[in-house]
Length: 594
Image (tube, rainbow, N blue to C red; front, side):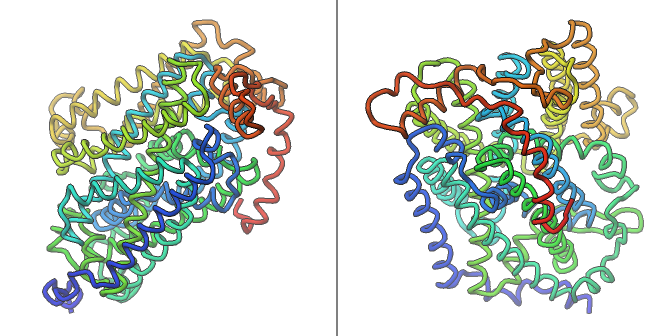
């Protein structure tokens, strides 16, 4: 029985090659993606509002699909399946916690972001603080895109293409990056969000097929649970030390990572800014919150099944005192490679390609938006809207090249890539999430406090990450004789993230108090206590005034009046007051999820 459960790789040898139908499905998917990019390129992407925010016209369904597709990349598929194989159900915490933070995004954060008419979060921070804070966050965010999202997506691509398809690494990566760059380059955010609608359905369908095949082989949920030797893997919250997700770490540190990614990350927030109005933005958040309940069932449970089916391939070892897998990232590729029959394998692989491309496209567009609005426009304030679109496209191409050049770095860090990914998010997110929370809740927080807290928090985080990478991991530091080394390097990454966020917040508050607090004009209309105060947001650094004005000019007529642009629409808190009371309708429409 145990031999039958584990399976035999040789018995699936006939299923290794892709059939003609598999190849046709993959080719058809790529052709449709290219066609969508061409359609939106020909339709309209001549101004910044079109290119970077899809003309602010996306409905709630498109926004929800875009949230989910850009949130679930191939790194999520590979990573979550690997977490399921190695540690079990505990990995579900991050996805199920995401549902709550999507609601926070829709009902707390987005109303403030949208009322100002900004394109990027750094622009919002300039309104709340000053230009220095805006530039700092823009630079750190761009660094995060390259360090985390590009790296993890391309690493996952190498795992899938080498394990399942037996493709050469460089041609496969160049093809994926080239197609993704094309439709992002051509159609901007419109192409990205509308391809993500299709990619959402494809991703769900392919994942359901893989999950069904895996669960059928282990006898369903009852068979999976009864066959799991280490029963700790069946618990959502664990108090043992044989996992990187301790109970205290999940409760204290995980909210900083989840909150930053869903509420204060340009990649996510840009989808909410692209919605046609606040109600559609909230509807998209509710839909995405419901969809985020699915990944543990679609990816994590199959990963647990893969541990039972292929323990030798995953290099899993279970003893009375410990349970671990040395190669957990191979769980999902092995399931596809060994269980999915010819004909369906092409559909599943198309779903994985969809996840890769949606994540890369989302990162390309969001990072090019940050560069164009928050860096280039500062250096060239007289740039026209059309010029900014061209710069955004050029930035997309540059980032695509950087993504490909990053592959050798990923290969060098592959042995510690999971630790690297967690530390990268952990060192970036706590100070930023703390800043946004305090900026909305405290009317005394000023730019001096914000910069001091951000700088110290990121100095601690990046220093720890650099030392751990140089050491090949920080696990050995947990038993060091040096108290300082145990605290700084040996602390669990989630607990360190919590400490990093708390220290950053304390510094922000103390320095703000010591330097006289914030100017009243800076906080008016942009904190929870002052949200009803009337304010005309006419100082989003000439960027938003110019961009929206140029967009209006380009669409109104072609009489050559593009040199003089009207001011940004005068969005006041009173004009968006209805958004604070509209949650009831969306709660009813979503089945009472609130």
